[in-house]
Amino acid sequence: MNKKVSSKELASQAAKALKNEDTSSIQKSLAAGVLSQRNPNNQTGAEMEDTASKVLNSNKYSDLTQSFAASLVSQSNKDR
Image (cartoon, rainbow, N blue to C red; front, side, top):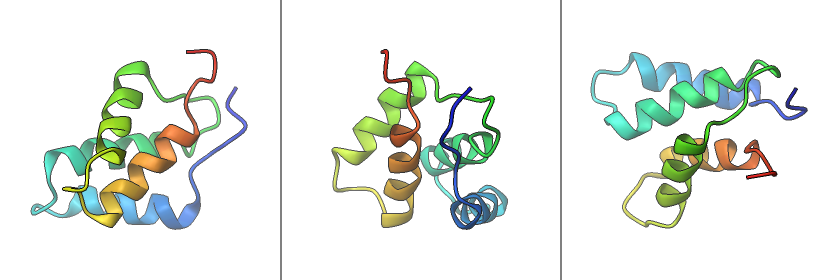
């Protein structure tokens, strides 16, 4: 079980991003991960960790997209 979960505020922003038809596919993917992480039984997968890491290492993504990525990385599996 993961002791870290996404905050209510970030999960709310993620839900709004998923509903917005103008949201990019990468932001939607990260947003879905953030929502999934509200459940302490869920854990960020290796592929999503990699994607989130690439987003954080790039300056082409919005602050919100990077916030989603940071949340997912902070909840990643430390054993990987």
